[in-house]
Length: 106
Image (spheres, rainbow, N blue to C red):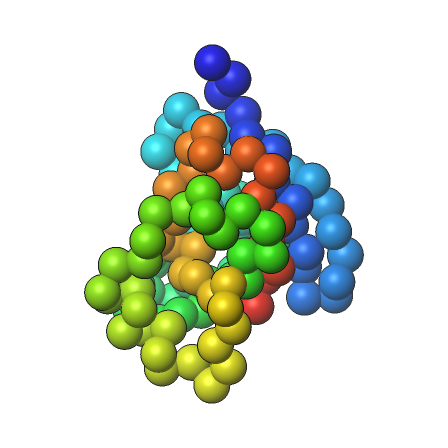
């Protein structure tokens, strides 16, 4: 089993980088993105209460678990909701994220 997962990340400036995140430390995608220097505010600290970690999943949405009611409620407060909108704090980094392509919106 590989301990790293490759994810393509588009930052707000539309630059795309491939990042390798560990799968064996139970990080949220928000935590992994922040640790890699991406501009994720994450005001609520990952409790699905602020939507400042909003991302768009461009490829790989089917590999993610369904959003919880709390996540859906918070997404509904956003002025712009896209078909691939998710809160990165609610996605755990694991091997199912291999090949995911996201855009940071928060």
